[in-house]
Image (cartoon, rainbow, N blue to C red; front, side):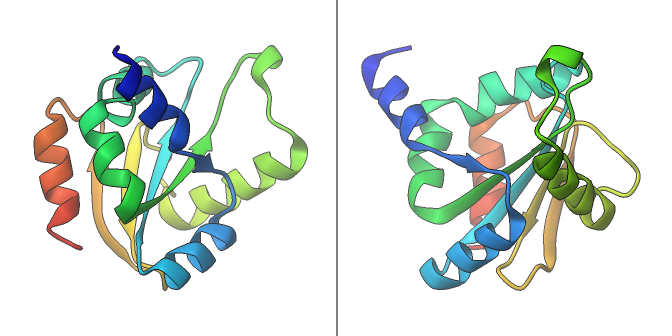
Amino acid sequence: MNLLTIVLISLLSWIGDFSQAQKEAQANKKLILLNFSGSDWCGPCIKLKHDVFESEAFGQYAQDKLVLVRADFPRLKKNQLPVDQQARNDQMAERYNPNGKFPLTVLINSQGKVLKEWEGYQPSVQKFIAEVAAYQ
């Protein structure tokens, strides 16, 4: 990774509060990208985060266009989330991932309407960005 990529990735912030994301999306006319991940047990989730979400191209695109939300469901005891965050993740899963698919990435408008879903690993960063951009 070059320095620009590292800086871009550090500027992107994934939040864990959907209502905060909706407010930000409404205020800034952005879409919400919600990613369901199992950060310590789901191989495709880890690969998706590394190859797509931490790529320079995605970082440049997402910075001005998306509010990023991650609902993580780690299994290892050492990685357990605070109770309040786990409750927020459970609420997001109940509404947007009732079948418990991992990874699942959901594009949502500021009113909470699902625009598109991606199941599993997305092998092409450019194709993924183009599919998201089609809804901008």
